[in-house]
Length: 150
View: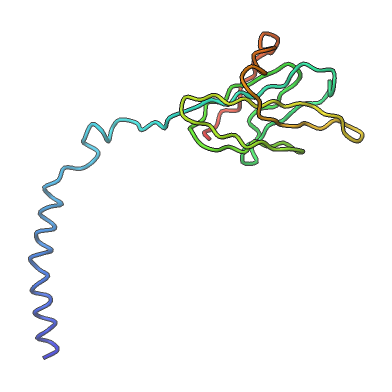
C-alpha cells in the first residue's frame, strides 16, 4: 500500500513538472529585454559641506567621515559638494556628528565650525540652511570629495 501511494504521488507530479519546464522555456531571458539593459539609477540629492573662514582653529582641519571613511578634509574657507542617493547619512568627525536626510533633488547644508576646546579647538558639525551657506559662498574654494559610492 505504501509503495502504491508513493507511485501515485510521483505520477501525479510528473505532468506538473513538464508544464513548468515548458513555461520556463517559453519565457525569454530577462537580459534580452530593453528594460533589463538600461541602468537603474536611484534619485539623487546633494550634501554641501563647508567650513567658514574664521581665525578660530586657523591651523586645524575638519575631516568629514561617513561609515568610518573620510570623504573630505576641509580647511578654512573650503566647501565640498557630495552627490548622494536619496536617504539618511550620518556624517562624523572625532568630536561630533550630524544626521542628514536627503530627498531626491534636494540639497542639504552642513557647516563645520571650529569651537574652542581644552588645549586645542574641536570641530562641530551643524545642519544649516541655504542662506547661511550663500552669505559667504563667493569666499569659499571648492574641494573635491573622495570618489567612492555611497
